Image 1 (tube, helix red, strand yellow):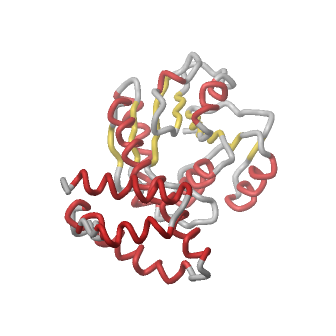
Image 2 (cartoon, helix red, strand yellow):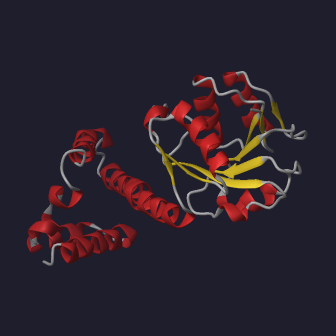
Amino acid sequence: MQIVIIGSGNVAYHLAKAFVQNHVPLAQIFGRNEKELHKISQELNISYSTKNLVESDLYIICVSDNSVEDVSKIITKENCLVAHTSGSLPKEILQGNYRKASFYPLQTFSKSKELDYSKIPFFIETENEEDQKTLSEIASKVSQNVMESTHEKRKYIHLTAVFACNFVNHLFSRAKEISDSQQIPFDYFLPLIDETVQKIHEIEPRSAQTGPAVRNDKRILELHEQLLQGESLEVYKTMNHSIQKMYEL
């Protein structure tokens, strides 16, 4: 099967790398950013283009959600299979006379960070069983966790991921602002962060909660609020209120 990846960002890079490492043949990686495409091509030894999209059996669109619909229009081959990698968009966002699908890898991607692709869950939605089988077989060459999913369920998967990843990383950024303001190396907090994440592999997150909010320690809560201002103070209050509501404190 001829496969083309469209895009040059984090998802496109890692998906191309995962395919190459697991001997899934790629005919081309296609996009607008020639500098990034050249880097990917050089590292992974795959063909790239910014102008000539080769004819393929499968196109996987790895671009921002805002661009998926427009990018899907450049694929003019009829009756091929086209999949996007968005967690939130329906497969029907794809515009063309071809078979439509979603090929969603549940992970946060940065080009500078190595990943164990075998642990990344892939959620697949297609228009027919044959395409479901095709995409599942491709994903199974990369990952041990491949599942069928409807768009409705995928929306909730993506929403959960935002809470579990994006929001948590934002709190890390806020935490680093505080430590930096007092010249405290953020590295000191990495063992705490690692233990917090590791703990929920063994304990339900609700049962693992610690800290002044779950203890309803008003003295500490007020002390912390006196140390903060601006957005960080609002985040602190909002998070503590949410914790107390969960535990009905």
